[in-house]
Structure formats: structure tokens, C-alpha cells
Image 1 (cartoon, rainbow, N blue to C red):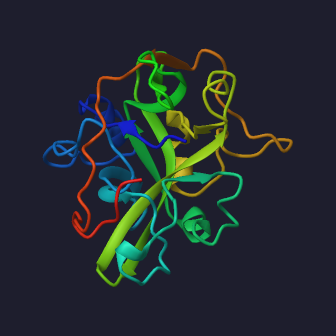
Image 2 (image 1 turned 45 degrees about the vertical axis):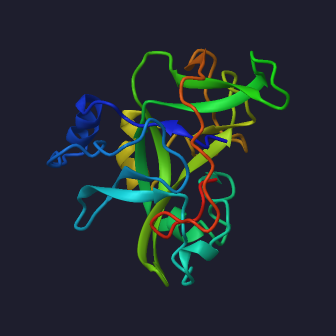
Length: 238
């Protein structure tokens, strides 16, 4: 789930996060090169813990490449743009990052596909844009890693997901783990937070009214890639 999301369009709310974390605002616009939508393998800015107890922003690839992967990136075939919060601590692909390298991903909205498309086209589903009901940004919990691949070093991240709550379960069985401001530093410091810490074997999820849903077909799919073509030595988008 959550295979595409909309990037931030303004700096104002990102400034709020950076100020809350005591960070200096980077020069330039981190989102200047962002596309209309972000897909797996695209580059996107994250916020993560840096050295000496500070925090920093970094441009990373969406779809995590674990530290132990040494081959050419074109040979990486795992689907890693999402990671289940319940399983990440035990999965070989995610467990090192989950234990040591957390991050925040600030987005405007994300998309899910559900229900018949209005065009009636066979096999095509309606796309729904999902945003917060109060119109504020979403801050997803993520983890990141650094791999020394045969193509060179790469830093990448994945989004954490949990069981869908009352707002989303009709559209998908999973939802992104979204954090509130009081949880940012705890998550970045790899400490338990209310949004993701298990309670009585239940993973908390969004309550009714958390999200707003709107049909969205305004962004066309990109043209199909030609065979034997590559982009920055990256595998085809998922």
C-alpha cells in the first residue's frame, strides 16, 4: 500500500518540524526537483538523526536497499517501499535499519486505488487522494539505510505501515504509520512512541475522521519505458 505520495509544495510546515527539532533550515528548496507525485525509486528528502545528537535532512531513494546488498542496483529485486511495523524488527531486509536508523517523511497526501473507475475501463480502479482532514501535512514514520553497492554508495528509505483503522479499512488493509509532533524526536531516537508501540497485541491505527478522501485522476501514468533503457542505473519504477 501507499505506493505513491504527493510531495510537499511549501516550506512552511516543514519549517515547523525543523524548528521543533532545533534544526537549521537548509539553504534552497529541498522539494524544488520534486515531481507531481513520488514513486518508488524516486529521490525524496527525509529527516533523520545525525551526529552528536543533532538532526539533518538528506535526499534518499524511496525503496530501501539494505546495508548488506553489494551487487549492482539493477539486480535488486525486493519490494521495499513499505515495511510492516509488526515485522520489521525480525526481517533481514529491515531489522538493522529499524533498530538504529529512523527517519521522518513529510508529505501532502497519498493515493490508494479502490472501486470501479468511472470510465468503466475493464480492470481499471478509481484512484483516491487521501489527505488529513485538517489539511495539515502528514509525517510518516520511516527507516533508512546505506548500502555500498557495485554502482557506488546509496542511501534509501522505506515507509512503515500498520493495520488500517476505521477511516481506511474500506480502501486498504494497511495504512502508513503517521506521527504527531510529540512523537518526532522519540521516533528519530529509536524510542517507542504511542503511534507504533504495541498495546495488548493491537497496533493502534487511524480513527474515523482522520483522513479526507477525494477521487483523483488528474495525474496521468508516465509513458512506458523503452526496453534496454535505464535511468541513473536505477531499476524500473514499481
